[in-house]
Image (cartoon, rainbow, N blue to C red; front, top):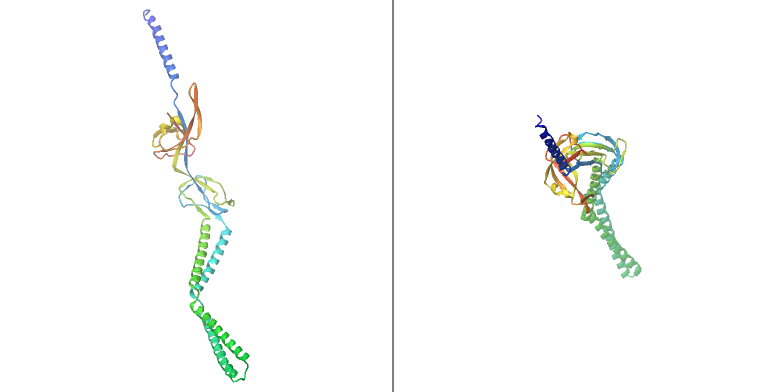
Length: 325
C-alpha cells in the first residue's frame, strides 16, 4: 500500500500537465466563423394604372392569392363620363365616314341635275337673243351697245351652265377617295379612344399579377389611391432565398454553384441545404480586420444569395440563417 502512494503523485502531475496543455491548445485554436443572413422573398405590388377612390378591398393580410384573382376595386365616375364622350365621338365619326362612302343622296343629285338643265336652257335663250340683236344691229335698228350687252349675257349664261354641269358631276361622283380615307381613319381613331377609355375602366378592377401571400394592405375602402400606388403587396414564398454579406477573404467558399448547410433558428435550428445563385459584382461596405500586427486593411463585404435546394415548410421572410465555417 505504501509502495503505491509514491506513484500516485507523479501520475496526478502528468494528468494535470496534459489537461493544462489541452486547454492551452484549445485557447489558441481559431474560433469558427459564423455568418448570419436572413430570408428574402420575391415581392409584388398590386396597383392600378389610374387614380381613383378605393371602392372595395377584397383581401386581407395572410390571404393566399392566385394570379388573376380580384384584389380591390376603384370607383371612378370621371372615367365613366369620359367613356360616354368617347362613344359619342365614335358614333359621330362613324356617321361622317358612312356619309362619305355613300356620297350624295338621290335628292341632291336630282337637284344638281335640275340646276344644270336650268342653266342650259338659260344659255340657249341667251344665245338666241344675241342672234336676234345682232341681226337688228346689222339692219341698223339697235345700237352696237345693245349687241355687246346681249353677247356678254350669252357668255355669262354659258359659264353658268358649265358650272352647274360640274356641280352635277360632283354630286354623281360623291366624295373624293382622299376624303373617304380621312373619314375612315377618323372613325378608327374614335374607336381607339373608346378602347383606351374602356381599358382604363377595366383597370378599376385590379387583380393579382402573381401567386403569393398578402403581406400588407396599405389603403382601405374610401381612401384615394394615386396612380401606380401599391395598395396591396404580395410575397411569393415559393421564390425565397437567403441573403448574406460575406467578407471578401471568405468569398472563395461561396462561388456561384457552391452548396453549404445552414441552420434556421426560427424553424427549430433546422438544417437546410443551400446553393449559391448570385454573388454581387460590387462590394457593399468594409469590415476592418487586422491581418498583421504591424498593418491592417479594410476587407469589403459582398452580397451573396443562396436558394434552398428543397422547399422549406414554414419559411418566412426575415428569418435568420446561420452558417458556421
